[in-house]
Length: 434
Image (cartoon, rainbow, N blue to C red; front, side, top):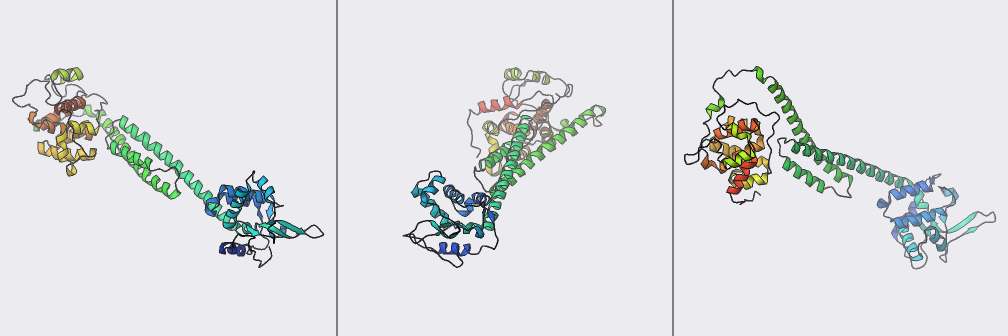
C-alpha cells in the first residue's frame, strides 16, 4: 500500500470513519514485520468473539488468504489480493454472490481487510515488463499484519479463559461427585447431622450451574461447593473419631467398676402411667397396643417383663433408624409451637424446640444427654416431640425417656411404631411446617 494513500469504495458504498481509521492503522506496520498467514488465521479464529466476526465471514477470509502467493504476509511481497467474485465463491465452498458480498462487508467493518477499489470497481493488477506487480486493486490484508500482535494477544486470552473454564468445570465435577457420595454414605450409616438441609443446599448449587458460563461465575460456584464439601467432610470425620473413642471405651468397660452404688437413673422418677391407664408391663402409652408392640418388636417383651436393667449386653453396632422430618411433624404437630418463630423448617429447628420442651416437661439435662448419645440428636428430639404429644398419658417423662434410652442400647426400641401410632391418633391431620 502506498504511504499516505486513502482510498474510498467504488459505487454506492459509503465511506466511514471506521474505514478511514483502518486505513491509517494499516500504515503503521513495523518495518520487516512478517507473519505466517495460516498461524495468524488460526489466531483470528480463536479470537473471533472478541473481533466481532462470524464463522461464515472467516470462511471468506480463509478463501481470500489462499490467493496470497506466499505463506508469510509481509510488505515486501505485497499486501493486495485481487480474485474475482467467481473464483472467490468457488474457494468459499460455493458461497452465493450476495452472501459473499455481505461477509466481505463484515470483514471490512471488523477492520481485518481493506478495499482498494479500481476506477471501475474491478479487481486486477498491472504488471511491468519483468512480470512484477506494479499496482493492484482488490482487498488489502495490511490490517492483519498491523494488528497481528493484538490478534495474537486476544487469541491467547481466549485460550487461557477456555483452559480455566475447563479446569474449573473438572474441579466442579469432582466436588459434586464427592458431596453426592459423602451425603449418601452419611444417610446410609445414619450419621448425626442435618443431611436434609445439606442435600437441599447441594441441589440448589447444582441447579445454578449453567451450561455456558464465564470463568468467574464457575469459580464462585466452585467456592460455595467447596465450603459445603468441607462441612460434610468435617461432620463425617468427627463421627469417625467419636466412633473410635467409643470403641476404645467399650473395650475397657468390663474392667471398670461402678463406685457409686446408686444409679443415676434413680434420680429420675420411674416411668409410670396415669391411674386410668392399663398398668400392663408391655403397655407403651405412645407406641400403641401391646399386641402390636409384640408383633413388631418381639425382643421388647422380655425387656419389659421385669428383667433387671443391665442384665443383657447392649446390642453391638445397633443404630436407631431415623425418619423424615415431615413424618415427625405430622405425628407430633404440637412441637411446631416451640420452634423458632413458631415454625420448624429443618432438623436444627426441631432440636432447638426439643430443648425447650425438655425443660417444660421436667426432663433432666442428664436424661436428655443420655438419649442424644444413645439415639442420636435427631431421634432424641423426635422422642421428646412424641412425649409432648402424649404428655397426658405419661406421669414421668424423664423416667420414660431413660427407659427408652436403655431399650435403644439393647436394640429393643424403634421409633417407627411410636410415630405411626401418633399419626393414626391424630387422624392423619398435618400442620404445615413452613
